[in-house]
Length: 173
Image 1 (cartoon, rainbow, N blue to C red):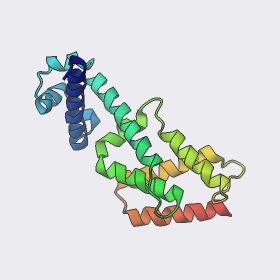
Image 2 (cartoon, rainbow, N blue to C red):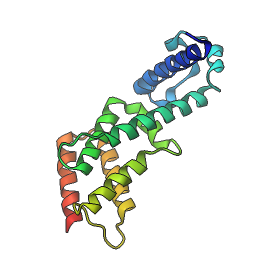
Image 3 (cartoon, one colour):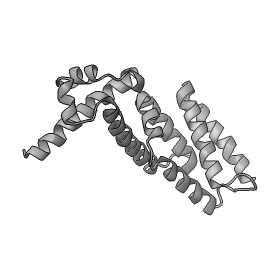
């Protein structure tokens, strides 16, 4: 393994350890000492790969924003494209509770653009209608708020599915 490959592998291992800790304790509780222990490095050794705690969190935010955007882009067809998007958000949040906050807050994240593209497709197909004061971006923001609200309050998938059906019915009228 080349030196560059070894560096990338060590960085990946450190990020994986940090991700497990974020899932367990949340991003605010992340400490270099815990990351070092979890990844078999000394706290000082982590600086060879990251600028410190904030550097690790920034790298995690980017990684998880990319993961969430990919999951949303690839949301499997189950019920309706926008309901499927909301369900994918909910499932990601439940699988990775500490990572959602990091992913959402990552600047330049593609998450919102993926949601907007899905809403635009639903508007183009006639499944959803826009109106005065309720354009594609506002529908996307509402969808995101509903899905996120369900994710953080622990509501069941069935209730999200039904709530989204009601929301979409209102957007067809």
